[in-house]
Image: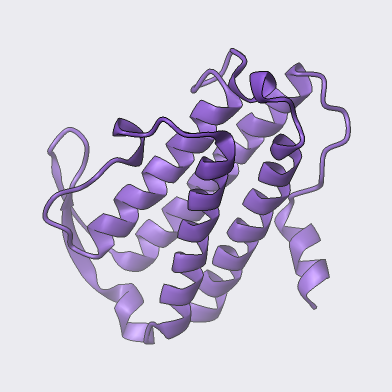
Amino acid sequence: MKELLLQLAGYHYWANQQLTDVIQQLPEEKKSQMVPSSFNSLLKTALHMWDAESIWWQRIKLSERIMVPSENFTGTFQEVANQLLLQNKQWIEWISNAQEHMFQHEFIYLNSKKEQFKQPVYQVLVHIFNHGTYHRGQLVTMLRELGVEKLPQTDYIVWTRKVR
């Protein structure tokens, strides 16, 4: 299981980096331009991705008080991208250093509605990486809406071909 999770974490980081690099090349106004989606701009979508990963990181670390990055954030897309990629690297490092039994460990957490759940760590990790894939798809659609034609392939299989 560790090897698969490590691959998913590595892919997740790589795919996020591919798209944030493209977004960085856009003018600032395009990064915040309203585009119909779950989160109505590239910046807000990336901020949500960072929020979600940060919240899960804190839950897995059993933090008593969860801090949501977007609550006090007033920075740029570059800052969001840097923090998101830093969080991605933390997953890779954590998984690399984890022993196999740690993925099976069940922990209790509260969701944003204060409902309590108990789940094994591996399920949360798979959720995090799948959540990233979902929102990267939204980012690609938004980029196309903003007129970006040259987009990198971010499929998992493309990543596996690069790391061999």
